[in-house]
Length: 240
Image (cartoon, rainbow, N blue to C red; front, side, top):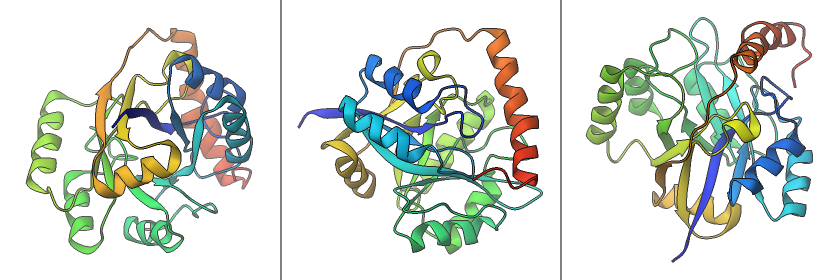
């Protein structure tokens, strides 16, 4: 069976990305992708436009969201195949339940990063798996991680083969054509339905794509959006 190529973790200007929906779709087509997932932070406001533009371009688009859990950890959870947004600010377990309650899939993004916030840590994930099921985990991603933590992640995944779900690769794209598809997932089947089936059947294969440098000015601009503008929009209720 021919494999398709997808990037299941992408951001737009609706949250802290620098690519509009049109630019994201165009970048995916140029990169030769068959599928992307729109997973903006705590909002699905770009999903409709991205889906429409994707359909016109022959690109499958999965409706998703990167949900922020409650303070202080503010752990991120990737929700795929959503019908409506998932409210942020809940516990990790409650967030997983809310995603599953509407038939979505739960993916743990960029785990074990050396940060206190945003990334699910080993003890957190161990406790979660004792109480809830997840559908997948990013085993390959572009977020910074130390060699020691990468080793710990590989060991954790290996020691929890029946609990960890599908193995995914994702770029966590924020820059459109500059970083889309740097890490991706190959899967058997076609389109969004085929990708979902591959996650559920655990037949996905993470792959490392091509990389190119991102200008320092763009990196600084994106970090400003992520660390300053996005939290202010969240606090003021203008995100969503």
